[in-house]
Structures are given as C-alpha cells and as structure tokens.
Length: 183
Image: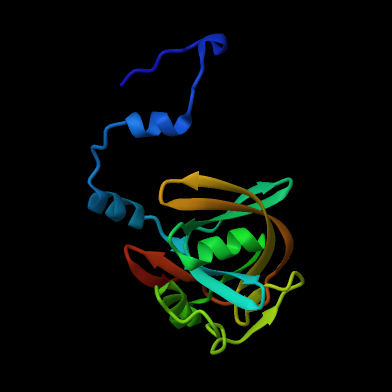
C-alpha cells in the first residue's frame, strides 16, 4: 500500500471511529492474540475505592505515558465491574507485582469473584489518596484520572501520578504467551 502526501488544508477526517470501521478485517483473532502474546509484559493489580467498597483488577496493560506531567495508563475491559468503578471514582492505584504474588494476580484476573471483601485475604494498606495498595508490591503508583479514551471493547484510562514508591526489591512477575513467568 502506498501513501501520498496530502497538504494540511486538504486533510480532514469526519470521525476517526468511522475510518476504523471502514477497514476490512483480514486478521484472525486467534492469530492476533498469539502475536500480541509474544510481547512479554509486567503484571500489576489496579485498585480503586468507590464509597466504602474496594475494587481491584489484574492488568498487564500498564505503561508510562509522559514525564511532564507524570502520566501512566492502563486498559480496562468495558464489561468488567472494575471499569465503571474506576471511572466513577477518579482515583486509582497500581501495585506492580513480584513473582511471589502470582496467586494474587490469578485471583484478581478471575471474573465473578465476590465484590465485597475481595482484598481481605491480601495484605494491603491505604495510599495517600485512600486507594488500596498491595503489601509486597515491587512498585506502587497512585493516580487521578485525567482522560479516558474509548478503544473498542476497552477503555484506555490515563492518570496523573500523585504518589509513587518502590517498597520492595524482588524479581517481577511477567506474562508471556499466556503464561506467568519471571526473570
């Protein structure tokens, strides 16, 4: 496919989402999952507090965005309970997991777990913003949501960092090709 330069005065897009939907899909979803699974990622649990209920979800889509201001992002599936809770709350925490916390990662990745008391079996503390952060995490970040981008079946949640720490020095938990791994 060749691309031609278009002068800025002639360039106009009515709706980006319309452009995306006009592209024919020639990619098998199973092959797509296999390809993106080749990219090793860290594993984290994102938490929020809405009212008097703590919410948590395992993610491997956490990444830095900007140094000025300090911004990070994670992606949340729109059908997950956590999605609506974190958007309504506006504040959230990230606990980057060490290899020793694979069981916590599996628990918070499981759909349909009980909502109330789901953090009770996991040692945690409150961060400066009041969000739960996991004891034993190799890094923690607290954020306030600055933007939410609609992206297919997920939302990209961007937050400005309000606090961070590296409380433990341990090997990270990784996810690669559908399996937990470590270095």
